[in-house]
Amino acid sequence: MDTLALSVERAPDPIAEPGGLVASVSLAGVCGSDVHRLDGDVRDATGRISFGHEAVGLIQELGDGTNVDWAGMPISIGDRIVWYAGTSPCGECHSCRVSGKPCDNRQWPLPAAVPNAAGYRDVASLSRRVPFFRVGGPVTDEELVAFGCALPTALSGAQRLGLLETGQSVVVQGSGPVGIAAAMVASMSPVAHVIVIGAPTSRLELARAFGATTTLDLAATTAEERRARVLELTAGRGADVVIEAAGVPEAFTEGVALLARHGRYLLSGLYSGSREVPFDPVPITAKAARVIGNLGALPEAGLKAMQFVQAHRDRFPFRDVVTHRFDLDDVQGALSAMRVGTALKAVVAPSYRKVTHADHG
Image 1 (cartoon, rainbow, N blue to C red):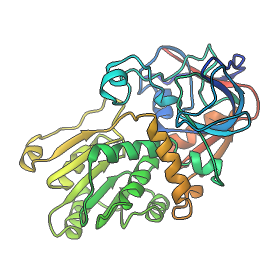
Image 2: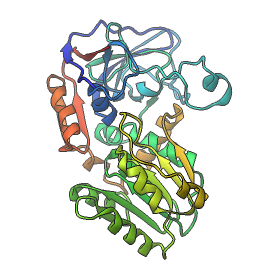
Image 3: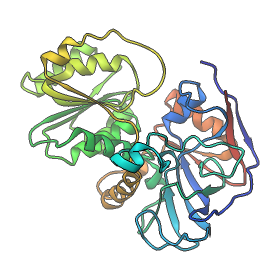
């Protein structure tokens, strides 16, 4: 698909609507989905749209009736908050009103022509639909943005998977933010093995710091060698759980092959593009396996992610996840660093009132 045209321009004046607020942006995380959307792999909007759905900043102005965050904590001007524009619920769909599941019509991406909560700007306008939470304690902006929406994704995935039991084994395909976050969450359970497949070696080293017990270098091994190693570690059974966080179609075929009988396969990375791979459904039946999709999170996942970082910042090196920092003038460089993989996590640090947007036809 055609690559979209990115530009940096002056933003519309911010507005604190009733139930909303205005916040200055301190840091905004660059998500892999930003790159996919800019590359044209994700077509969920038309017209000119804004970018940046992982942000932390300071409250500048409160709209009428806004006096608590989404967790019910009192707020005031000057408070630090973290917000997740990408999980803004519509409040009207079946999931919002009836089932309690993640919104069917989430309010993202946002049109660039109006004030909005996108993070690639210096001042954001959060409507009453945008989940935000007051940040307390010594946690840094970088620690909060380190896993951005990757940690809510991992936490939501863990909920969809269900209980990880003592002695079980987990394989994570992918060593980007989603993969490392998934390994970290899995490591908090009483499983015997958390095996991460990925590259390069620097990311695998970081995966170990976040709880991986074994890492397999994607560039130095074949699929057959990786399967042999997983079987060796699991007494010939295979993995009880495989989590796909690679975003590569070929990972699906390999993931199924790594599953033990009665295993569970969680797909967290394959959400965009149109590439296909041959698929034999027989092993799913033969293994009585479950394949579970994981996209979208409830607003409360953002709160749980913030609380997770606050509770475990001394255990896990969140500060090491942010590898590249860019000014708003060079947001294209931030996206490029994520696209080619030189950055594990890039962040944008706005310095003046501008907004990035792209034509999305």
